[in-house]
Image (cartoon, rainbow, N blue to C red; front, side):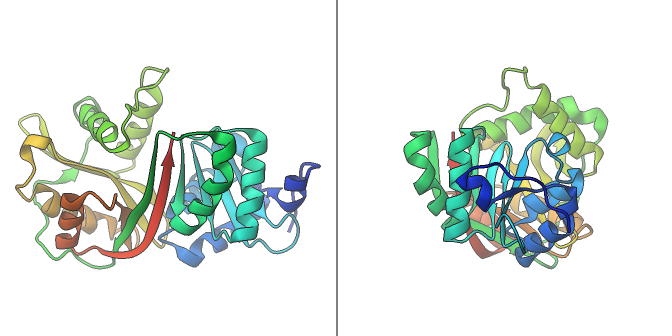
Length: 287
């Protein structure tokens, strides 16, 4: 299998920049833990590994021989199957290029080690969330799906977008409306809607529940953006809404997953009632 050239530095000699020639090997590595790595797997399947199409890079470890770990470096920095040696190499490359991501996210052990090496160079983050349970379900939800939850129509983008912005701002702590006036975020939501991966309960022009299937591989999906207006919470909309999303997501892959902040007790309870159980732990560092 062909290899791309590496940079002439210590980090460069221990890593290689992956290209489409590495696609099968990279996907095989992701699929060793299809739930934990569904985001990276989904990005590779959708865009390939060429940086211009991917909108980032994927670094492979080691620089020569069989691939044992990789790291997605784009809007997020996401390690895959990373042990102490590969984490050190990823941290060295990330320090060398400087921080370009808005978060470091992934399996808690790897992200914890990675952040311990990056923190002296990257400075104080906006937030660190060290315990984020990864939850999954592989069959129908334990409760009846909300019959009013359906796929969002492309014509409803402007209707759903304020709820998406409210969810993002509440969850992440900053607005997704950046220097581009929100064009990139709007385009991302339009893409999910056109792909049949945005779901909502809409009554009289109001969004009462919404969620997206943000990542899809043949083996797992990852749900994101679950939101109910604050004044409507406590009515079971999230539990039954998630049951409806699970029903749709199981048409795409055999496992439905998501990750949640450990301190978000209402959300964890709703997911538990819908049949989700913990299968791992993520950690996020937000900038």
